[in-house]
Image 1 (cartoon, rainbow, N blue to C red):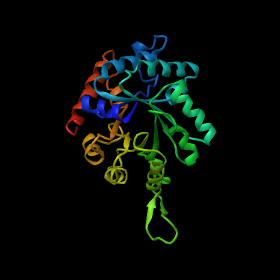
Image 2 (cartoon, one colour; image 1 turned 120 degrees about the vertical axis):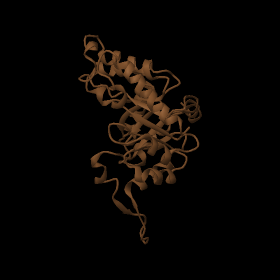
Image 3 (tube, rainbow, N blue to C red; image 1 turned 90 degrees about the vertical axis):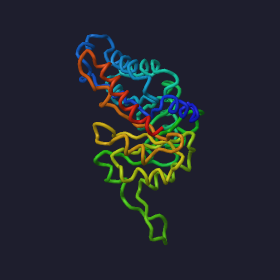
Image 4 (spheres, rainbow, N blue to C red; image 1 turned 180 degrees about the horizontal axis):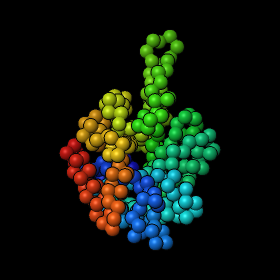
Length: 273
């Protein structure tokens, strides 16, 4: 999907909602458990209920890989069911030496034709660039995350250059450097919503790029703070909500509950679009 197409979807739906399909077989409603592919039955119902409000769906591959070959089949069926005008994300956090990254890119852009894949940049340029060689595909690079351990490395100050007193945090170096490898047309960054004091700073560093922003809802982030500090003229953000929507209900009316949760998020976002 091109940037123009993504922006068009955002504007037409007045939404920046990305729904995370982190489907845990232990959490889906009991009445679905008897089905041959219970996870797909759940995902299908969630997609049917929320597709009018979502501009993206993010499939966390770990929840599918853990089920072996059947899980990969579920992931493929889910991906194929998502409407073609909705942006798709493989949340796989891949990144390795160049020839290995090339294979990961083929996995998630050809074999499983997602629009984008999340990438870990720790190994540097040759581990990220293979994901940037595919037309109308995106690398979503980990930038500033909201997990507890993120401060172990991401917030460390590093010397900008020998002979200068000013220092950058490591995450700032990552954002600036990786942005030079790609363009705002094929590179996004993961920026945690719970880092509200840094959202505006990151937007100033990268005024044109899209951000995938997790952490709203169960993790404590909120839509107004994110939108006020991170949006640009194209919207420029995808706010991911997983548990707050897909597990909004646990009974037979779970899809209806997901519908209302997604609608509420979209309504909250529409004020800023």
